[in-house]
Length: 339
Image 1 (cartoon, rainbow, N blue to C red):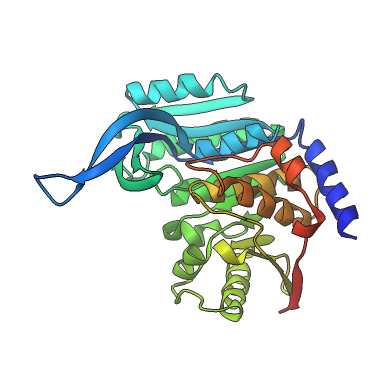
Image 2: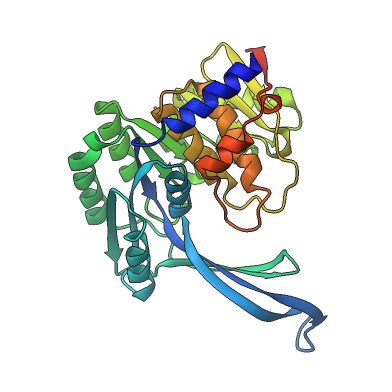
């Protein structure tokens, strides 16, 4: 049975080519300053890092986008940057990615978001955020929805990548949901707690346990039963078609209906960095659904992909080829419980 499922998952990956998914969300730069650290500053009780390498790459919603591109999905992006040089650089960079759409607006009321991480000996010592995370102007909301109406028919799915930096406002979320549902387009959400209840009627939500419990206003789950109860409550409250609750080293819980939950153990062998793992999970699950998979198959693929990226340092992706090679019958175990 597991051998047959492994073969089916590999076939689904082959079907990714030609599928079209649109990402809408918060665009930002991920900047890394890497060096060595061997002493404490005489000026203050802080480490001194001797910088040796600096690199910058598109992050936030564009990390979801990069995951889709590396999966051989035909992807598009909609978002907002500041009216600055960093915003222009973002637009120029994304136009090199062979996307089917790059719809990015410049907003003069904010800088382009930059997250700078300082690392030494493979450990993150500090993160510096430069941003203005207020809601985008209403005129910009209307423009995004206008363009979405014109292009929605080209896509099998939309992923809303919410980093709470101002793009996915309550009004914009409601408008996207209305347009997508009217066109029968699958909507996947990687949520932020502040907007949790605005995502009612989404096709998929992929919160981690911390986001899920905070979104409901309850304590963090201390055991499996509490995690299942939280997931069930979220799915019922928000009327979600699918809920994938990510549970770190405990794996995932897939809620498809109000009758049962499937618990999937983690496949990660070593965890170096969890940065961006949620982006990979929502990208792979949505791509699999667009390619005709069942929710269980999509969750199993997402779990394997998540195990790949947490074994890499920094924001990373799992390519279609990596996933093909990583699928093993031993990774396809799950347990089903009645609700």
